[in-house]
Image (cartoon, rainbow, N blue to C red; front, side):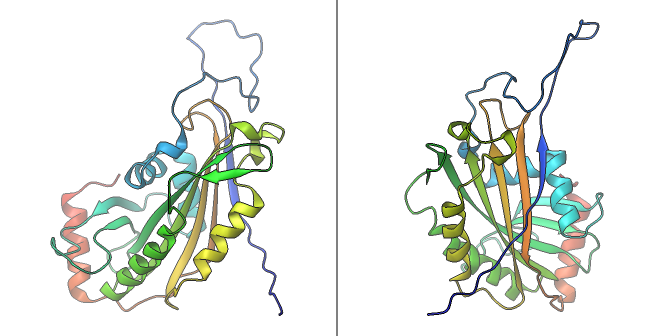
Length: 251
């Protein structure tokens, strides 16, 4: 049996925060060393709606995603949308649009999102949190294919791995994300699904390397592994996108 080897590349942002009171004497500040305040918050506790809102309000994540999609930084964004884009009692996937990016009315980008929470148990070993998490990828592909059938200009499925990497401290701060073995499972399970030819795939990883909240220190990586192909958007959908933008400010 012949196996095709593929290489994917993430573009990453590594960030840390140092805070001091006005007028305080600062001897030295160490960044990327795990010296920030400890928090009980774990990135793996963020639900899908939470993590989408987090990436939109977190400059490092938002700008990275927009840049990788070739979009202006001022692009309109909204999350968790049903009306007016979808009928309220829709019975086919998707039930809502997890993330909508609108550079202009005729070219909106629908992104369906599934999260996979991962906890590092040691330098080399990690585990997913909760049963059947990898199975969510099947639902993601159905939802992304469904948004393409609705007729959005571009349609993506995005897998977000949320990694609590504190136990991976033998590695540098920037390299405490998912293990190669875990990511291979996620990657191959995604491509084992019937992804529509016009639907794109994005991988995003949000890693919490230390006990400091991921709001203040972390690593975000994005890979647009397959570019979506344009769909001819119905005029009625363009009208509904215009209505949305007129009544809901950008997040």
